Image (cartoon, rainbow, N blue to C red; front, side):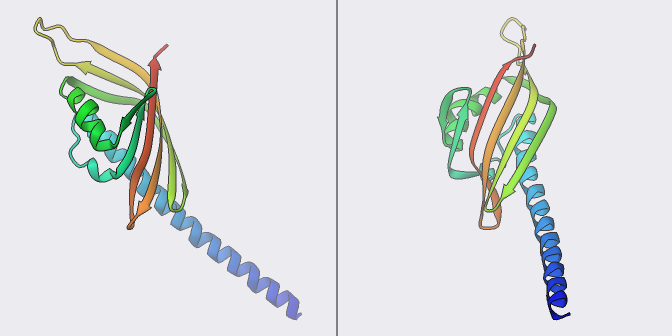
Length: 158
């Protein structure tokens, strides 16, 4: 009888702690998804405002086979100037998967992005539509999720 009682108590402890950890993981996953949504929304709004806090200072950005450097360097030398030429930047068919393994999280995003360029001096505009994928590694630092590494690539939509 004593062995049955101990086994029952042990089983209840395992069930109780697994539910607590499961809830904690879901909370962390939601926090990671919020970081990624904030970044995506900023791009669609053609701004980098508020995005620097989403990345670690020594983050690494990789895009379509290129090493872009830190996020700050990427914004200053690549994405920042590009956004000024965009009339519209929109994601569609967007899906994201996130896996949390504290203190890290891993995301995979798939999407189609459409960029409409501002008109040139002859009032001509151009639309770019590509299928893209991005993977990111985030780390929880001082109770805050930040992107440590991100890689994106794209190809023409078929």
